[in-house]
Picture 1 (cartoon, rainbow, N blue to C red):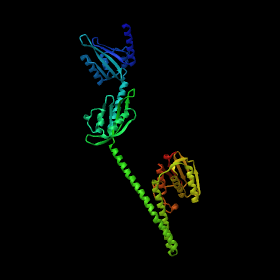
Picture 2 (spheres, rainbow, N blue to C red):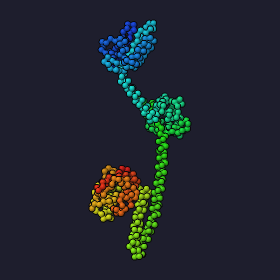
Picture 3 (cartoon, rainbow, N blue to C red):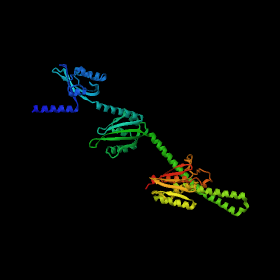
Picture 4 (cartoon, rainbow, N blue to C red):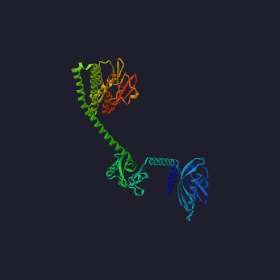
Length: 492
């Protein structure tokens, strides 16, 4: 039976060795012979009838460290009977430089002296290159982490072994000697108020319920509090059970401080703006009465004493009435502007085409102006209808007002969530781009193009901001202007 089984296993062994590419070799010190099998010869790129010897075999190893080391290992196994396992470089018979793994075992004689040694021989060039690439990537990662003050940690969940790089100790304000290498050590470094939530986030990541991407505070031994941003990946076995977590930490204390300062500044600014708007509302409201009274007194003066004023007096009286009218317009616009933020928006799906047509028809009749309107399908937008009428009233009024053409041409269309309003007016010089939406900023003399307060476009922008919409424009002198409103946030 043994005679049948032994050849079977020998064939199985040989077939396995052939598939794996592992060669075997033997050095007979008594007879001064060396044996290489086919795989060993293939690895050395020699002919199958090649007759190796010990010195020649050693000379295949690359000159320098590899050759010196194999000589040392061979001498050690011969003299002391110590086995070896090494990875070195050889230069094949065809001049190819490759990495090999060689394992050597001593062969003892009857008197326990070394009479030879034998072992395996395997090419590992591909594996070695992969390991070298991994090593290079690791080195780069370490350099990048150090440059960015990023700490790297690796936690073996099963063994509860936590490994930190040098940067991690700096982030937690401790020395490596103070670190036990367990999960509890990390937990003890957390701020007392963040320990429970930190542990909960770790457990959620281990259970696969949530990624570990969070911020927490650490309490240094000297009492200093630092803010840490942490991210990690969980690695699992074939059954989905967590094996380890690999992650990074970096200090965001200064960023947190800046954000807090910015939030405080934003709050103060919002309060200041609110107070300013409240003042503008109250002041403009209170101004209306004396201005109205001034206009009434001017009218009474003209009616009762007009014949006694003379031409110069009448001209001065007309100037008072004109200034009162202008002041009333300014106050009305200031009130309108200050009310924009105070009013509650009633946003509903509105048919924009009919809304714009109604505004245009009203202006055509009211101003007795010849308007050539090309109106595309604008669809519906979720807007406050009253405030949106005010937006298009201002835009179309300006298209008519700042226009020297006999026929005022206005084209309005929609592409996606953007609405375009194009006119054939006088155009806007690019140097005035920043002033167009400024409050009480006119680009022309107060009596040119019908006068006005210069508040219209500021009100338009404010209303659109309340809708979370934006407005911009393109213009050429003498060719007209195209206003572009982005209603993305108002899409139905």
